[in-house]
Image 1 (tube, chains in turn cyan, red):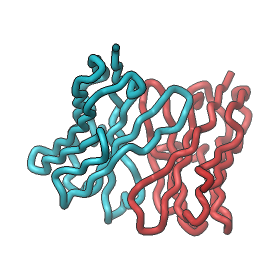
Image 2 (cartoon, each protein chain N blue to C red):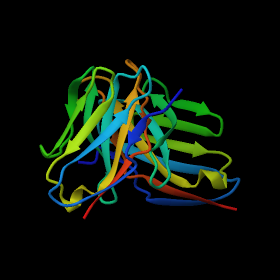
Image 3 (cartoon, rainbow over the protein chains, first blue to last red):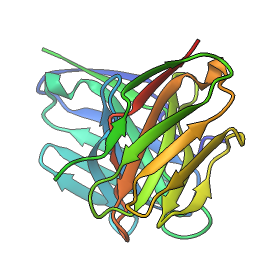
Image 4 (cartoon, chains in turn red, brown):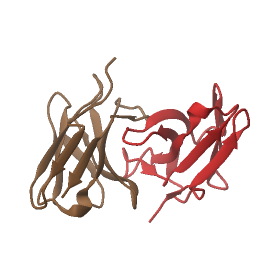
Length: 115
Length: 112
């Protein structure tokens, strides 16, 4: 039961352009969302997060948008750089209930930024 | 501030053997979680420990177990290894009350 879905396994973007990575979730108990970047054989590196009380959070080139009614979030990277090429994971957690402390991950999107 | 440290980085074991993986969280972090990453299943939650108590467990067989020590360091154990246990095992820690997790570099386990 995949409660967090990233429907695009890959995305290819030219350097300098915007990268938009999408994520959908099904569990309305999720109230905190995170994006991680991952290189092969390494652990995920935290990028940015957003609480369900907000609809946007920005950190430098990275902005996350949350649409609670659609159960959808997106990560925007502007401008994209070749060093951004990696797998990006969307994750969600619930602040209460039996799954407290657990992250639910999407399957990831491989972003390739070409010069 | 040191990050999450996992040892060993790489491990090769034979089917039927058992293995123990170690994780040292960021200093001051009392919550430690374990995840398994495989190409077919993505990142799957194994369990979470807080103050030496298992608070949450994922959908894995009883061959997967873990524990946490009083200094918050954690170990996970897999007994009777199967080929399908080959994966990257990731440990993550977080501050009490925090919502963000910091991951270690993982242990790559290969079962032959």
